[in-house]
Length: 324
Image (cartoon, rainbow, N blue to C red; front, top):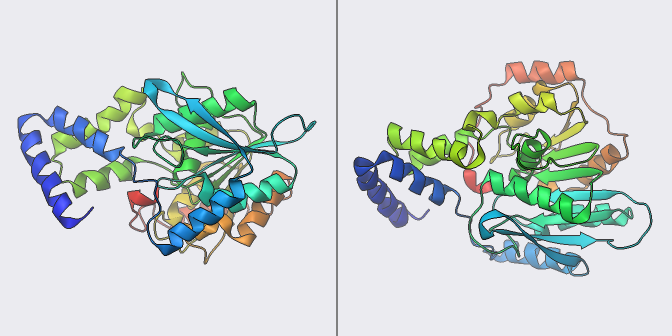
């Protein structure tokens, strides 16, 4: 946020929480869920967006209706009557969209598989400016209902976390994502720190902060602490490949280690040098994803992963919500 806008927001919340911490918390949640403009900013972002859009231009496009009037958008490549084939789902991160996942989508489509790439509400072609985890999980379920069962799902950042929440069946009234395998790329392992950092940013006092976090339970039926890989990964029997860069400055590598420590079926692949965003199109990453989906991924032993997780603290590095 620009300094002036942040000062105005802090002043507004200072007054509102003095009158009603509950109203302040609810207003803070609405602000927390507001998504950035889908228009790319800067030369590099515009070039990447144009290149990705060109690669997905031949795909079919679908709008998926969600609760409360929200919508998700989906691209489908290799759709239609092509005979028996794999079907993969791809989800993006906060502030991103399917076009920024075009390298991965194209690689998967080149195998002959049917590929569905989502734009979550408030992102890409979906429209709107609002998203929370419940809506993301609902969008994943809507894709499954529209296109059929998936053989695997691959998600980056927030999109990876949403896949884990879906696969674990945390939202009891939403169908979980199908598939024999999951791939998480640069994904956070829990959500509490996001709310803590946001509350500090806008200077919420304890009562208003509690009201902000209570909105998660009011809307999803689950408490904030339930959205944690330590509580969910162990409930997922399917193999999970976690890809992360130790130089990721937006989602700490400690999140990957937490995933690895949570269950023996989680495999860890380090893609160092590619940070948080370039990782989704990096050649070694695409190769690792392809191998894993074919059942040939090479992974560290679960004992090694657990040992690393014990050595490196969870809150090792600062992280920013904008990346998710």
